[in-house]
Length: 154
Image (cartoon, rainbow, N blue to C red; front, side, top):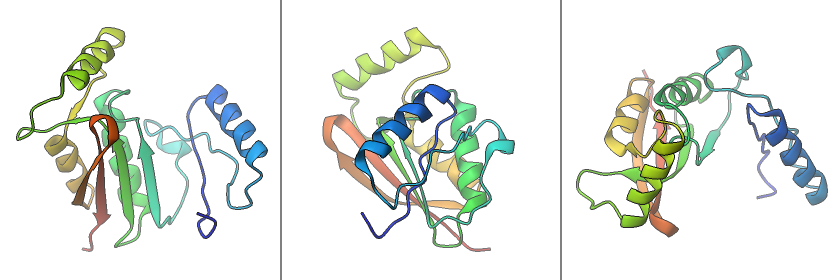
């Protein structure tokens, strides 16, 4: 997507070094250096505004407070109409949990009891509390979902 400027982020110095190495090898002019962003530490948050925030495979591999932090960050840096795109596995009341996702959830909780698949409606409620509305649910490969939220006005 050469028409977009991307700013990757991670709280881990090791992960940022990996991102920088891959970015250097790719040589893409629209890929900025990675930020040391931690959704649990507002002092690390960039000013914005940003047209979009993309969060891939974080919500289930972090404590619930990280999801709340992500929503506060997105609510702060997105303009009205701005997009928050999240990707990963979710629990949904009306959809039977795939056996592979159930096993994955158990393995996450075994590694850290604060981790695990989140309920889509609880994530949407946390987003709504920060002025973000769930506008689209897209089924993705391997029993993952993309949930798209838009910043609403007023």
